[in-house]
Image 1 (tube, rainbow, N blue to C red):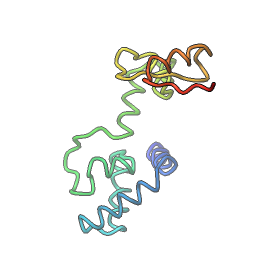
Image 2: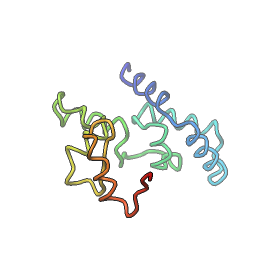
Image 3: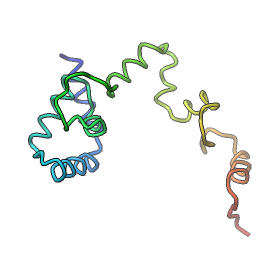
Length: 137
């Protein structure tokens, strides 16, 4: 129960409330589900299935009763990474730059970190990745 309360607290803290409001209004207008009913179903999905508030809309959990779980929620992904990765390596999944460096071969785009890269690399990256570079004269 403590774990579920912690998850619920995380969902409350990390929610993008502007996006959440847009989703709630969209569902109200297009599916005729009132805001209180959405809120109750969203809280139930968060408590029973570990679905974040955004998972609730991304997986369209508002549309029907959950009979069989066929998706991985925020909590599922968290515990998957926790189980499958050594504790001293988990930080890679929390830091986007370290993740891109570690899995460079799978990244389909270039990346550059201003604070962590050598100062002379910025000009080289800009010239290689941009067709036109703006320079002062």
